[in-house]
Image 1 (cartoon, rainbow, N blue to C red):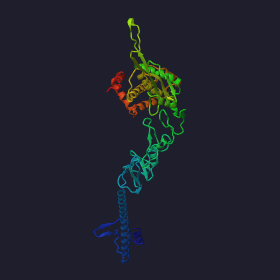
Image 2: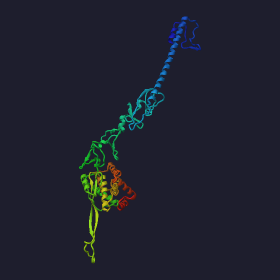
Image 3: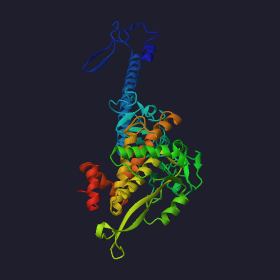
Image 4: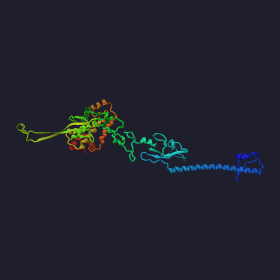
Length: 473
């Protein structure tokens, strides 16, 4: 309307600018002094009014066009969102890999960022895991950096970079410390020890990775082992309590004799004990028909022999004098003599003791006149005694048996100080080995024997074995 006022410049008429009157006929000009205008002036005024109206109509049209554009943009954004279906991504297996495409558009409605809990205004946002996010708020659970990749992984309801997820959840080998590879089917395949919870690559079972002959663990690469003379490997933790020769084993031998005496099973004969190498033990096993030993590897052996004696009663004559005995029948009697117990050297104290307790039970059965038993009954009851001895050792904080502090325990404690926690763990492992043995002789025999002893007691179970040759049921 500025140009309208310029038209009125120079005129004697005064105009009240900005004030209009309107009736049914349209816009009226402001009132003036009442003079009559010329025809030329009337034409200028008409043109000015027409231009003014055209300008106002253009402004209204521009506003309407802008609103229409906003509505079209919002409809387009909503169509894109619905077509892409950017809802919570599906989970696939353990990896939970998900692909998302950040879209830049103007959101409609009231949305709250799941990261910072503030309203998401106009601009780019993400729709992931059933929630909305500012792009900078969608962060990895592990490293706390924003996730800008097109793929990410989830655990629970938390997002991860693929590399961070692998570092956090993909199992690593306890031996080589690398990620355990996948097999041709794309699955992670590894070996696990049932007791130590150790995970390692299947290849280490065939690449000459050393394994401790006592605890059966594979140590991490670079860890030191002790190589024994007979080719076995011993880890440093098992070495800490290993018994290396016969003299060192004598206190433990006395300890187990006391244990047998405490349960009313004293051995009357002094049985020689020898610690030997693997080769000597295997040779003795081959030559011993009545020997009893652990399978698959021989760790202990009870050597015994049958001794037969011939006796005859003299015929008594007058005055109770002995007469010619050649006509009298001979009486044959036999007894079993235990010649020695052999134990594999270089094993930890608790393992050596459990093997010795097992072999001494073989000796006790022979020396007390038990008949020849089936393997599952004899090996089963011997395993029961080995298990009982381990329990008695582990039940005492000092490491001595349930009767008293043995010379073996006192000697070991004075030499090593307080027993390390690993030795108790090792004792639990040896118990686990006995309990979980799957062999029909040692495993099933132990479980049948333990069930009988728990139900009837040790002495009644032994009496039944002597009479019937089987476990009571």
